Image 1 (cartoon, rainbow over the protein chains, first blue to last red):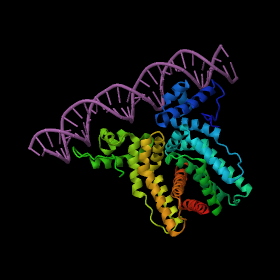
Image 2 (cartoon, chains in turn orange, cyan, red, green):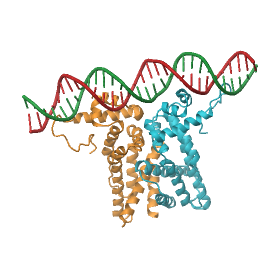
Image 3 (spheres, each protein chain N blue to C red):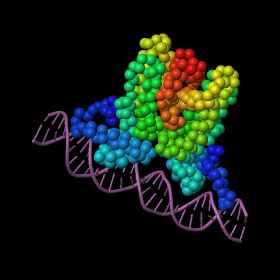
Image 4 (tube, rainbow over the protein chains, first blue to last red):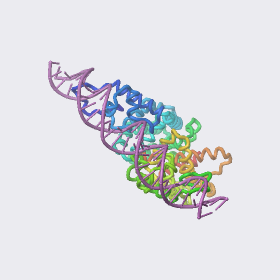
Amino acid sequence: MSSAASSPAPRRTGRPRSPEADRAILDATRAALVELGWGKLTMGDVAARAGVAKTTLYRRWAGKSELVVDAVAALFDEHLELPDRGSLQADVEDVVLRFAALLERPETKTALMAVVAESTRDGALRDRIRSAIVDRQKSLVLLGRDRAQRRGELPREDDPAAAARTADLIFDVIAGAVVHRTLVSAEPVDPEWARGFAALLIGGLRGS
Amino acid sequence: MSSAASSPAPRRTGRPRSPEADRAILDATRAALVELGWGKLTMGDVAARAGVAKTTLYRRWAGKSELVVDAVAALFDEHLELPDRGSLQADVEDVVLRFAALLERPETKTALMAVVAESTRDGALRDRIRSAIVDRQKSLVLLGRDRAQRRGELPREDDPAAAARTADLIFDVIAGAVVHRTLVSAEPVDPEWARGFAALLIGGLRGS
DNA sequence: GGAGTTACGCTACGGCTCGTAGCGTAAGAG
DNA sequence: CTCTTACGCTACGAGCCGTAGCGTAACTCC
């Protein structure tokens, strides 16, 4: 689903695109992000690392932003999951630490904000980020809420519209706080911070 | 303080730098951000807009990132303040809406995330962002907390280290949530959202 | 008022990246 | 075996970068 060229009509004739090239390019992109960062990463460099012609990159991705989104999205697919830790507090701490661990990687740290910045002027890019990365994160929030409701830790909401608004709010609070702590304040998200944050969030959810 | 070249030794001899040029350059930078966005903004273009030689820009700023930080910081200086609204809830709503209004401007929307992304690989740039923008925001949080404590809405904390940790947490939660809502979720921060967010935050602060 | 010092505008430049075009070749489908 | 598409390679014009060099402007100190 996070594959490079979202092929609505998977061409039935002609030479098929090489899956090895796809993997090599995405791997090379992540390696280049680690070594060079977003700013100095160039399409030509990625092509050379992947052992692939530059034109092959442009056949699959429109530009640097799209390529990097897919390269980073693969990491989110791999590492974002949410086992049941038994309580809402533990689940929140867990998702916070997982997300933070992802953000502290040099590949994502330098890339994620950059593509979000680009997306403010490019609706297609924003949609790509949303479906490849953001929606996956949000589903964890929804999962955690359902579990907490089943445990009786959170009240069930009757109005679906209000429930959606609350879920959006919680998502922005969790993801935003972790991103801000990591990238702007440049302080580590350690278990202690996660504990304090989860306590703050859950206290607010009960109080309202 | 947000002036261009932080001149520790304000040269006492020779021709002084033109303050008009400073202003023209920063104005031109903001205009270029609005029209072109971070990605397509170039030093040469800014110089042309400002009616200034390109070399003049490079005498003051090391590059695009530093220039844009100063151009955006001026906006924060102008628009970030926090009048006493009489209650913690109202103060939080107010600062959220002010910060969001700044972020929804096309200049800041496209620039802020970009320079933060760059700063992950450039410590000097991170320091510049911190002193020019972030610390100013944080002081509003500290101000709001002091007011709330004076009103008796929040308990006074004895341990200064713990108090600092709490303030940092609150700052990351507020700023992070607003940024994430605006730039990632791309949804408006309206009074209703601000009310819900403030209620969540304050509920959590009381609960702990 | 002259000497010294720094800023400014202008031009020009090598170097890099971009994104594309054109071509011959490789790999599948029918 | 033909058709179609992907691939590697080369080459290219265009644009931006950041700097050097020069003559001129503005201000300070003597």
